[in-house]
Length: 133
Length: 133
DNA sequence: TTATACCTGACTAAAATAGTAAGAATAGGG
DNA sequence: CCCTATTCTTACTATTTTAGTCAGGTATAA
Ligand code: FES
Ligand code: FES
Image (cartoon, rainbow over all chains, first blue to last red; front, side):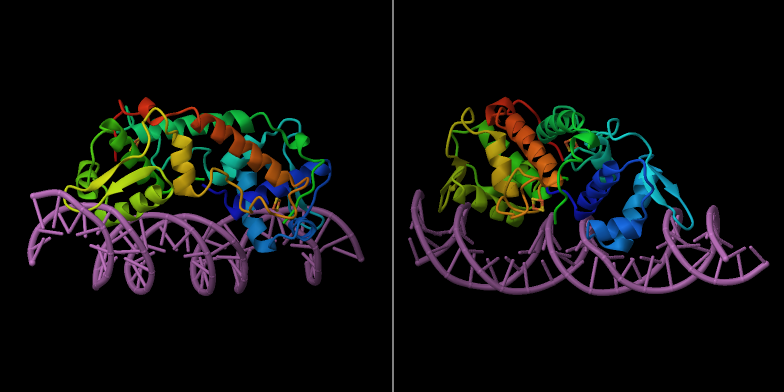
C-alpha cells in the first residue's frame, strides 16, 4: 500500500510552489531545487494542470504556479489527483458484487479515514517543512 | 495506493476461517470455497502462520485454524502482516531525513488514521458478510 | 506404508512503475 | 521576423513488483 514515487514528487512540487505561491517557477528550476528528474516531473506537472491544480505559462520565463491559494488546496485533492483515487480497493465503485462484500467494506472504511485526514491538511500547513529525499 | 491481491486473498481466508473458527480447514477446501489459486494461497497461509495468526495441522485431515478467537484478531493485524506494514511511506522509520520532512509528516498521518480505523475492526465483525470476487 | 496435506524455495509471466527521448506548439526579446 | 526558452504530447524503454506456478520435501493419520 505504498504511495508511488510519482505521487511523492507531485506533492513535493506542490509544496514548493506553495512556498512562494505568487511566483511562476519553471520545471527546470523546480527539478533542480528539489532534485527530481526533470522530464518525469514534466509529466506530473502536466497532469496536475489538467486536473485544475496548476496554471501554466508558456514561453521564456514561463513555468507553473498554483491555481488557488495554499490555504485552499488540500493534500487530499493533490494525492487523489496523482494517485487516481484515495481508495485502496482493487475494484471500482461499479463492482457488481459490492453488496455485503467483506473486503470492500474494510477497504471503504480505510478510504473514508484517509479522506477525512487528508482533507484536513492544506498546502499552507506544510510550507514550513523541509522537502527531503 | 491499492492493496495487493495477495492481501485480499489473505483477508478473505482469515474471514472464512473466522466463520467456523473451531474447525480445521485445508487449503484445498479454502481455495475452492473462495475461488482463490491454491498454491498461491499456500504461501500466504504460511506467512500468516509464521506471524502467529494461524495454527496449522499437518497430515491427512490437516489444515489451518485461527490461533485466536475472531473477537480477538483485528483486521489491522492481518493487513499489517500481509502488507508488511500499514504505512504508505517509501522510506523506513530509520530514514535520516525524517525530521521536518513534509511528505513524511503527511504519510505518517495517513498511517495513524489507517491504524486507528483497522484496529477497531475485528474478524468477528465481518463473518456475516459475503466474500466476493 | 501409504495417502494427505502442510512446508519450502526456486522459478516465470505479466503488469505497474519510473523514468527517457523526441519533437511540436507557444511566447517573449532583439 | 527569428531565436530561444519553455510548456505540451506521445511514444518508448528499463526496472521492479506482483501474481502466480512448480518441484520437491516433511509430518502424520489411518
Ligand atoms: S469484489 Fe468488488 S466489491 Fe468485493
Ligand atoms: S525522505 Fe525519508 S522521511 Fe522524508
